[in-house]
Length: 192
Image 1 (cartoon, rainbow, N blue to C red):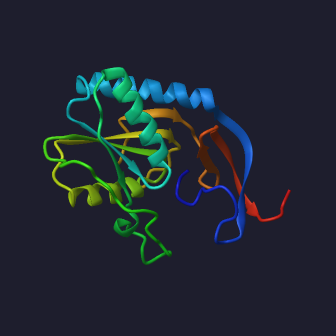
Image 2: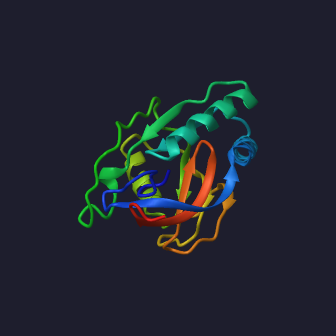
């Protein structure tokens, strides 16, 4: 799930209320299979790939994507985890705490890194991820795979692989989980 779009109550006392399911579990699986095939086609296989999931919503998707890539191409694809909390440009505006340790299992030199996130919104998380990745070596290329691109970019960032383009209002919330993707609102806790 995207930052600030977690299930249950948030720090500000609001909760996610779903209005519509935009992808079910089968849609999500098909989108990941399609993305895996697109990644293999663009990169002529998986020999130089490293899949890196962004904490926290991109990690489960990255695991599934790395497994699909390995299954389709027949070779293990390294999987990493990247927490960008301390690289964000809004540290002074809100409390940001690292979610989990970053783990990049291989040297990134001469590798193609496929960054994976669940929802692309303003692009600021991806900008932070690019800064964080630089601390782990100079990759040959970085490609971005997202399950949902909801628009509203504040930075010139565009994904290479997209599961679903989902036009939203800025105040809407996109929630991603294993069962699919829902669109909704944040409401005060206890509201029907």
